[in-house]
Image 1 (cartoon, rainbow, N blue to C red):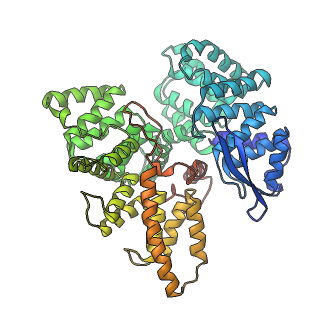
Image 2 (image 1 turned 90 degrees about the horizontal axis):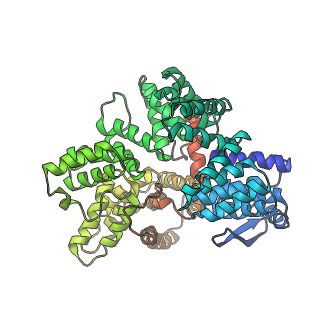
Image 3 (image 1 turned 90 degrees about the vertical axis):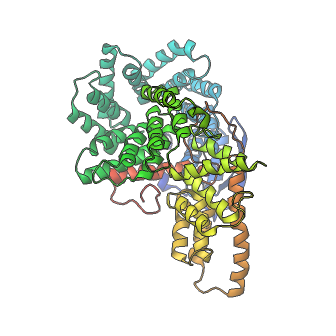
Length: 594
């Protein structure tokens, strides 16, 4: 994502020759109008302010620079414009049609990755083909190759895709060279091809591209294509993580793995890199940081056992077979969580399905030792992702059967004990507001603890809820500063509602007329319940159970327009920059920095 945003900035400067900072920005004090734009999936409504309406008019008349400007504004946010990848996609499409090959490539990237909340391989191919064949843009050829390798006809398209990748790399497109290098390094045991990947990694790393440095670090660390050299491996990973642009997740995971072998200061810094890489979706980082926390055998480490369980679950949800195996061991031995044979075998079976040999080995051992153990697997399969289990639990707690209701609650409690914030938020609501047949009377104090735990790790709705509770002294001692701080957590995750409430909190006089406060408090209590029940009802409304379908981990509280993935990505990069020393500040409002 960072590389794509960087490419947008470079493209914008090249097209317009004018720095963004020198221009008037859209402001909420300006006039505004509602607009619609075609994303290829829907006619997307949105609003523009002031000068951005002029940009839109120019874009729709065929001006590439203004289309690109608006696409970038909706990717990253600009003035009054909030990030919304769906609207950004609409403008990338217009920029492509107006003649920008880079915009065609970006359109293909967005619809292939699902960044705009849908995937459309045919659309990606169409736009990438236009950019590659009509506008002769190497990056669009790389995008076309990636699109051709997706879908049911991927195998028959492989030769064409390989040719496009070679063509793009020969034209010095970094995406083309990245794909070419990874193919030669990952997809074959042919030593000659492994060696051919190394110069591409070296060239990429010399250009401070993170993919090149991470590949070079892996090569020197494993001895694949070059002799093993730990010093060079560490240096490459550090360059990729600290000094490079692009997707730094892999490089920072590798650098973190070197750091944890050092003294306490180095270890703790390495933990942070691994933590951040795991949060960004690197399942290997989840396993490494999970082991540190779960087993507690690393002196000086700050990662605790519950965090270890959380990271292992995250790795398992990312389809890492080793992570599922390690999490099963926690349930088998009662490491930080109650032992449970049914959960153990379910996780081992998933580990085996994912191709982890030890998972198959231990699943057989456990089943041989207890032939009936699979009959004890909970009705809500513990091998499903967190999001899938919570969705199933929501169905079970609405059942007429007491046993089923308890089954649903038990699944959520189990996930909460693994450290999951969504589960803590759901349980907290049940305890505060009751759950027929399970929690027939309110256990508000316990519920508040669960909700506050979820808020502390950045759960947006929980942070809003507990922030309001502290603001009004509802179930907790009134503490307006703490209320503001929790609201700031939610606002930093991109919640417009929280941002508005936070501004209101800062503006409110300390002494408030008591009658108005009483009326306001009554309205607030109703809104608190509605906020929790609305989230609970909508978070899983469109979920269809499927044990075989995996979507990359994304907390259900971070979906839709309430939270921007762009802001989250910016926070994530800020954390990496802080850890790497390229900035000396990481604000408390950044959830990755706490």
